Every structure is written in C-alpha cells, then in structure tokens.
Amino acid sequence: QVQLVESGGGLVQPGGSLTLSCAANMNIDEIYYMAWYRQRPGMERFLVAASPKGGKSVYVSSVEGRFSILRDNTENKLILQMDNLKPEDTAIYFCNADGVATWEHPYWGQGIQVTVSS
Image 1 (cartoon, rainbow, N blue to C red):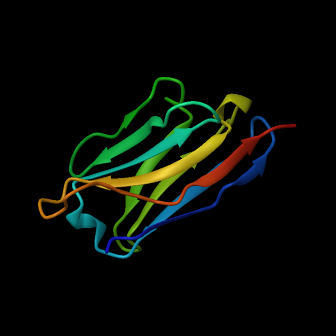
Image 2: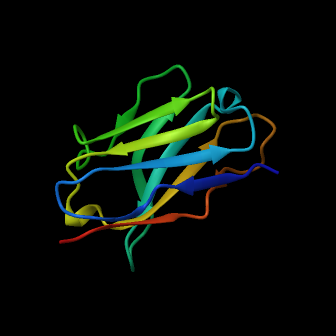
Image 3: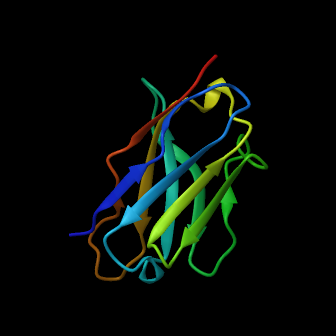
C-alpha cells in the first residue's frame, strides 16, 4: 500500500514562505507522475504543480514564478517551495502520485492546511 504523508503547512503572513514536503513509503523514482493539488472550502480540488519523471515541471499560472516543485529522490520526498505567498493561496494542499503500471488508481496524501493571513 502506497502512503503519502504531507508536512510543513501552517499559518504564514502574506509575502512569506512555506515548504511543503510529501514523504512516500517507496522509491519515488519509480513513480512517473507526482503533483501538488489544492482545495479551498466549497471548491473542487485542482492542480497547482506537477513533476513528471524526466520531464519539465508545470505550474498553474497563478503560482508561476512563486512556487517550485522538486523531487528529492534520496529522501523519497516531493517538495513544494512556496514563496511570496498570498491570501488566495490559502487552501488544503494534497500530494498526488500516479503513473505506475501496476497501480489501479492514483494515490493521495491526507492533505495539509496552508493559511496565508495577516
């Protein structure tokens, strides 16, 4: 059973930074697709940033230039570095993993709250 555990969320003032981490209980180099999603109250979950194995990372336009996604293959972690945070970045952030041939479905972390407020 694949497990993804997020950490690093919390409360930060506008303009501040947070680093989210998603720890996997497997070698993430075997996972083709890993991504961060977020969900605001009453809204659908949507993609923030994605890291395809061996490919170029992609970002939603609202976070382009402020967020960076990267894989730490030595620690089997997916990182989301978030800088210049804005109140509209407030959401629950979820780690996602997909693209392994033997998997019947993608896997999700439990989610972690990020609140940007003064």
